[in-house]
Image (cartoon, rainbow, N blue to C red; front, side, top):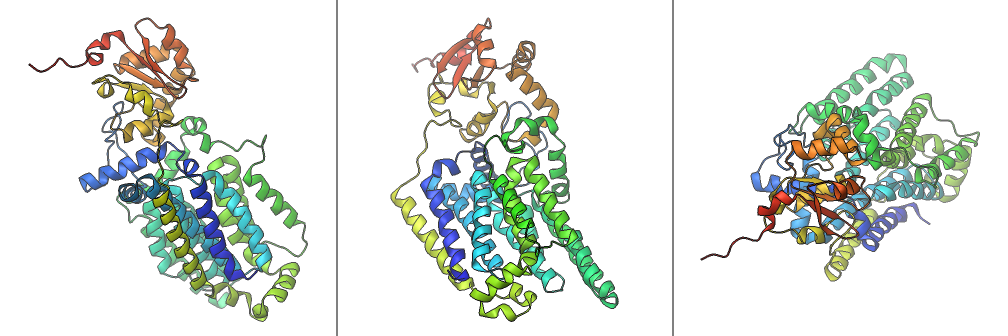
Length: 493
């Protein structure tokens, strides 16, 4: 198989996977509030700086650090409904994956590219969701690949990467990872340079590093966007309660485990030697992937880029390259910066996105009551009750915002803070005194919980509360003193 054929193949693979299971791609409750945030921005012509959605912390400071992604999701929803959202997220993932394959193909023979791409696809699959981190993947891949191409060519990174960094910073808070990669690679470049050229290398990379930090501040949040990821990572209670932020469960085979096993096997090849700084960076990514399930994709997509040069210099790779590439005699740096295959990739991506659009037009994506979408429960609410204070399951918050109902809590854990999250979790798992105190403090009139939530049996037995509705997705309790909200309005005379 020719290396130029691999990028469009993997682009089509990602698009096909998204179209085959759009429910999986739309299966995260945060997608709802991201779209609602984008709609708010379209309606107000501004990026929110205070919470416009919840009733428990109204007006609290909110860093809408993913504003550009949310705007894109809202525009996609307006243009094509849920199919438009699916297409946008799938196209972003396809672009990132095909670019990764193309960049690896400039250095490696087709077989190792294929293996690394399959491993990257495996780590991408669990987090392939219509959320900002997916929309930011092309920018992440382009920035990291650009840094490493510059390093391989013994030059400073291109100023064009500063624009990529600015785009990444407005799409997702993960841009700080890109900033963190610059100083180690600058140090590697300085150590590899001849003594007479070292000062120039330090100057060029230092200027780029300063420019990248400034580019990361070119957002509505300015320098606050640099601090936000660290503020989020310091929220131990909140992150411990959110599945994607927990360590992977290795009781079952995990994509990051497959990647690690492959890396350990590769380490047994005596001719493969990672430079110390690259090894340290790779180990840092592995730590992130083991600490947080959501970060496994960083291992799968950035790890191969970091290791590509060492693989290319291995005896086994050189032999494979000699068989499949007539250009193997050129220096490695020349192979890194060559541009072949771009046309085939663009044609493949364009054709794939066009076919996906036609498929979605013929097979519209429709949504009803789902595990994260208590549509039937809300449809059974009496007039007026929806606007009364509600105590809800964490995963229902996004749908409530999307439906125009102010939630008690939603997926923006950074907005609510660790103390609020701790109190909420104690009420849900379940501490009767804490639950009663929350319901009274916030004058809660009704609740919207999952059948398995620990607070449900307490509400069933609690004086002054009764079930109004229940199904396999959601249970609604109301206070009897909410009678005014439960009664239909009197007929007009």
